Structure formats: structure tokens, C-alpha cells
Length: 247
Image 1 (cartoon, rainbow, N blue to C red):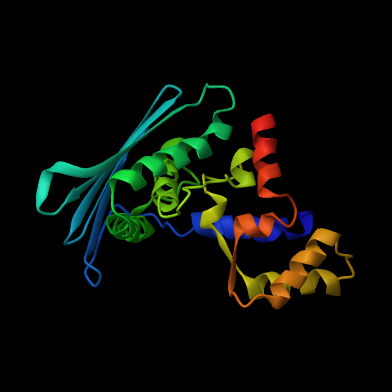
Image 2: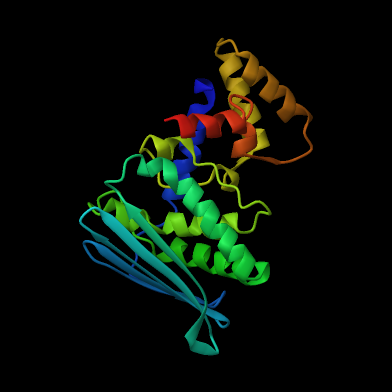
């Protein structure tokens, strides 16, 4: 598995780097408007289009993080369509290990109370908005505030899956990445094949798990593979969940 870890690290860092620094922008072609204000310990992000408006606020007090993601119809700015509240106590023992369950539960609640069509459009708005407005957090001392949106983003994405499942990425558990569900990361099959071919060309022998993965990649008709499916060649999803619960 270590042979392919570099692929995973590159994939996650690529996700983080797609948010260039900006304070206000308007994308006229797609009619998505976004504005953010980032303080030392708080953030307000507003995103809107012709159908919906999103207000996301987050603040860090001492060792607690509070955030609220509220969605309104453009025709009613008083009564929200739905709201996602998120709270983290960074002093709580093993708080990192508890976030995936929290994401899954909130996703289940959202799925019950909101239509998939609405959630899908909100996801597109969020992705578009933060692409152009989210601060580069590499030099931001308030790392937790800047990266808090990834929890809410994961709730939205998980609600689009029937079981609302969410396995955390290993790098989040080791504090080397922002939060992602494994189910939301996809790799290009051709890129993985090329990576393994390079390893073989360098004379490094493949372990049995990577050999099985390579055989699967060579035979599949799909162009991408989801990260949890990729990772299951090295550790089953049940065993990975059990490992988290045992920590």
C-alpha cells in the first residue's frame, strides 16, 4: 500500500489547492455569486444564484468550533429550506475519529427532510462558490476555521448516497489532511495503471494486494475507481472501520 500512498497524497493536495485566495467574485456565466469575510477566528461565506442562497458562518472559541450552513429559496429569505449545524470540541478525546459518524448521521437527517434535487444544486453552488472565494489556508493560523467547510461539504455529498456512508480518509486521521469521505474521492484508472507500471519499471516488486489491484484496473470498463474501493484491496471496509473503532 505504501507504493501507492504518493498517489493518494497527490490527489488530496490537489483538492486543497483548488481554492485560490480571493475576497469577492461574481461568475456571470453561471450566475453564481459568492462573497466571504475571513477574520482571525471566524468566517462568513455567502453564495447565491437565481434559485437559492447559502449563508455559511463558522467561529472558533477556545477549543470549540461552531458552524451553521443555511439554505434559502430566492423567493423566501426568511424561512430556510434546511440548515446544517456542526460542532467540534477539539479537547474531546479522539474527536478526529468521531467526525465520520457525525457526517453520516447529519447526512441521513438531511436525506429524510430534503429532496435530492435541491441538495444536488446546492452541492454544485458550493463547489463553484468556494472554487473562486475560499482562502488559501497554508499561512492561516486559524486552520480549523478555514477548513471547517469540508465537514459540511461531506454531509451534503454523503446525503446523495443511499446509505449515507462515510469512511474518513486515512490522512485526516493522522492530521495530514482536511476532512474527506473516502466515498467522495475518485482516481483515474489510467493514472493508477501508469503509476504501477512506473513502479514495476523501476524494479520494485509488487505485493499481492497491488497485483490484484492492477489486474482489476486492467479488466474494468470504468474510467475511475472510488477511493474506498481502491483502499479495499489493502484493507477491507469492515476491517478499516473496526480499526477506527479500536483506536
